[in-house]
Amino acid sequence: MYLIYFSGTYKDFRLPELDSLLELFGYNKEDVYSPSDYSDDSPFLLASFPSDQAVKEICSRAVLIKSVYKLWCKGSSWLELFDGLQQLPESFTHPYYAADQSWRFDIVSYNKTLTAQEQEVFRLQFEPYMPFQGPIRMREPTNIFSCVLHYKYGTDTILDLFLGTFVADGQRNTNARFDLKKRHYIGPTSTCAELASLMSNQILSRNGMLVWDCFVGTGSLLVAAAAHGAVCVGSDIDMRVLKGLKKGKQVGSIQQNFVQYGLRQPDLLRMDLSVLPLRPRPIFDGILCDPPYGLRAGARKTKTGVDANTPIDTHSANTMVYDADDVIVDMLDIAATFLCVGGRLTYLLPTFGAHGKEEVPRHPCFDLVANSEDKLTQLISRRLVTMKKVRAYEAGRKEEYKEVTRRSLKEFNLSYNDLMEMTVEANRSEKKTRPQRRERQRENAKKWEKAVK
Figure 1 (tube, one colour):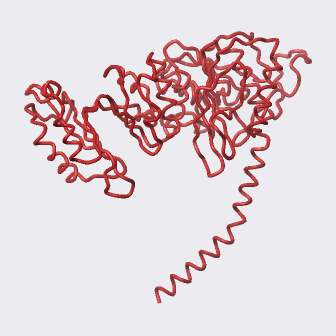
Figure 2 (spheres, helix red, strand yellow; figure 1 turned 90 degrees about the horizontal axis):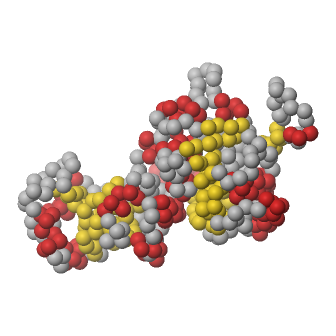
Figure 3 (cartoon, helix red, strand yellow; figure 1 turned 30 degrees about the vertical axis):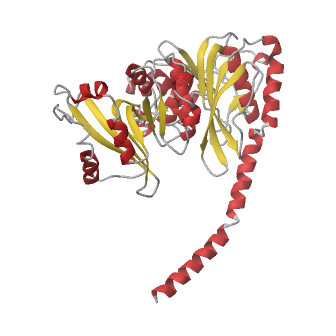
């Protein structure tokens, strides 16, 4: 049995990422853990990995896993923990205590910061039960023993205690390694490294896999996919963002970002998603994107019909606003066209108010894999939707497919043309309470003055 210790960010993304990585490395999630054992309120999950090697494979890609431990025993009190430790057979514990086994003992706490003195007190409690014969080694010991304490938030009450040996750390250094602040070329909508890596994991990025970002922007999603070994293709209608900045102090480009991290260069294409100049056939193993819905950056499309004009080498097509609902309808249909059967699509989806796990835009060629919510404000959420292509695309049913997606947008109240209006109205309603808040502040100030006098 193993103990997974998750990070505190993106709580709703934890299990979807774990499920995707288990599938990526060929493990059955039903054999590893039970969803009933998990709660968003706790960062801990008991899992039955087949071996330490399986744990190291998962942790080599997992962004939301802090650490994984091989569990020796657990309890809700120190007495229960030590009873479990004493019941372990000597044939299991004796090899760890041998003279040729160097060791270190860590105290790990959740919901409370322990001082060095408090940690030492806890360590000494294990001395009568764990007769180590080997030398202590702080750096690269043979075994790292860890006692994990789960505190009730804001109190000294211990809810759970776990004792085990350290197996592997997750990739929590992703944000530092691919920090946007240190990246040569970014924009206002560049996706943070942690979320980009999560999206790459959701499409099962791996060596040799062909991945496409159809709204590539500054290429932040493709950086994550390339770091996982994928061969990347990016497209955007804005030639300026594809070329990068050539003047002034902020010189940079997408290619420069890949050079910065020593990654394979992506192929970049200027394309209009509404009129793609590609032969319609399944060629991509995965598609990931952050579509522009008009909340921070609006989408554009070709203004005039490309077939109605005589091509001129020096001509640059005019563009017009791309209807937000049409963006999602076209994106799903294009993904169904160009994804291989079994390939995955993952994209970010803003939603307003409460929505169920199944309430996402639909397409007959896709099955929903995961729908993870990241609340941005009290009213607006950003969801990471992952879908798997399970049926071959039939070109003769294109309009039927699109109509299914349009109906789902209306059925689940996901019309993005209305989202901006609802957001503005919500902000207006909040502004109405500002005078009330100011009045309360005045009253509190008067009470404070009286108290001082």
